[in-house]
Image 1 (cartoon, rainbow, N blue to C red):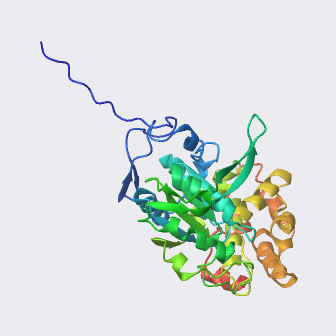
Image 2 (image 1 turned 45 degrees about the vertical axis):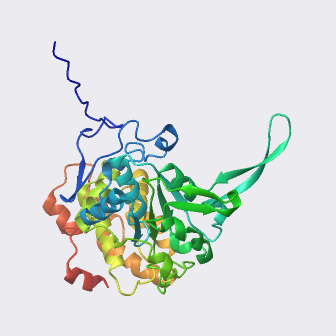
Length: 365
């Protein structure tokens, strides 16, 4: 009798709701990565996999070149530094890639109070059931990722005290096999093969002179040299940002979405306003508030979501841009009457095409 041949089962992956779970993901037609399969990670690390559905990534737009660089870093377990203005999608892009690949990731928010104990770990005194005290080592978030095999996202790394970052040099050394913790009775902690680090920053680590990101620090060149790639991310293109706005705010008329994005684009490109910006995050807040309270009053609600954080001088320039796009009062919005079927020609006459041209920019500057 012939022996039955064993049929090799295909690996299936954890999230079966929204993608083919037996094929690799292809980034920018050049990099293929298989997500983690069931059994490849334990229950502890599985809880740190970014949730595609819960985090609302259905509407996320990842620039192709950014996706490719993230995929390259994650596939090869390297370190990546992502630099860009506030609210442009640096961290959400990393977590989006993590959700697609179902890779566990933990996030550490860097700030002036960041400490070695929160990153590496500390000893703490505990008591057992008999009441006797004993000393136990508690891993910090960076060492936890190193030991358990997770990606570490260092948010706003240029806001951390430079001295603290020296403690991460060994962890960031891609070829390091062990990390020595003197406080942990000189234990050598082996590096898990799935560990990698992605840091985000508003500056390139050379200091900041625009007054947009006061409090950021100059980063040591030895620290920067430990990142295999540095990617500069900017705000989405006008068409892509409009799509994000429409997807985030169901029911927002495409013509109005174009007007919101046009305002942001004109403010960002205005040479008189180098110390302010309107992030995609801020744009969504403005449009959302206007949609919920009264869609006819974008100028009024821009005060609370966009303008009031600016200096008097910048506020005047930005308000003029907003009024030029939406109208100085509500008459133009009332006349558009978006509650009924919109006539495209009528809308273009009232608001323009929503496209930004060099001629329009020069008029508004």
